[in-house]
Every structure is written in structure tokens, then in C-alpha cells.
Length: 87
Image (cartoon, rainbow, N blue to C red; front, side, top):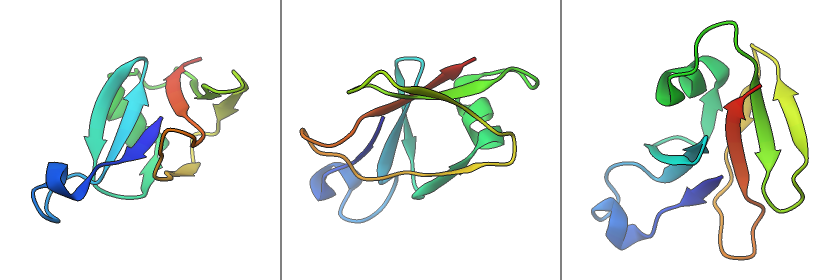
């Protein structure tokens, strides 16, 4: 799940702008893109372990390719929610 933090929560335009949900843990992120190696580092996912993207609204899952770049989208209550986990 990637959500855009409120301006007040970001210290008036400074600091992380997004949150990334990896296996239920929320990680702050400051860019709208994240690579699979960056997801691995944030989530402590070992190299060689598949990384899956899960739409929490539909429960649809997709295994990400090692060279993929995920484009995060700001979320609101009605927005699509995405989570990442080991495959």
C-alpha cells in the first residue's frame, strides 16, 4: 500500500512523502518510484526471494520481476491499496 502523507505530517514539505506497506509494516518513502532491490532492503527480504505485489482491495497478486520499477500512487480512503511481500 502506498499512501501520500498529509503536508502537516511531512514537516511542511520536507521528509518522506509516501508510505510503503511491506508484509504489514509501513515504511516511509520519499519518491514516487521504488525498485525491487529497494523493496528488499526496506523489508529485509533476502536476495533470490520473489517479491509479490498484492492489491488489498481485490486480493490480486503479481510476482514482480527483479528489474521492475514500481510507480507508487498517493492513496486516499477510496484508492487502491497495495502491499508487497515475499513470494
